Image (tube, rainbow, N blue to C red):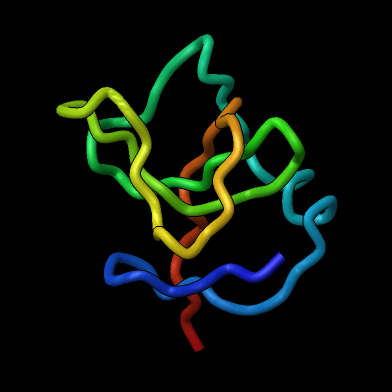
Length: 84
């Protein structure tokens, strides 16, 4: 999995999906959606993890048009930014 930076967070590098996902506090979408326009990690039904945000105006998810996008099932806050 490759995480890419966006204008809100500097998240980049390679990490194993299983290792990364095990450390996250995933919130199922049946329980709660993130705040509108808050960039979060979104876990898909096939196990993929993407960065996106809930667009309350459209009642849908927004993300980079270059990312593959499946069916979202859970979300988690982005990790803190790296500090050297």
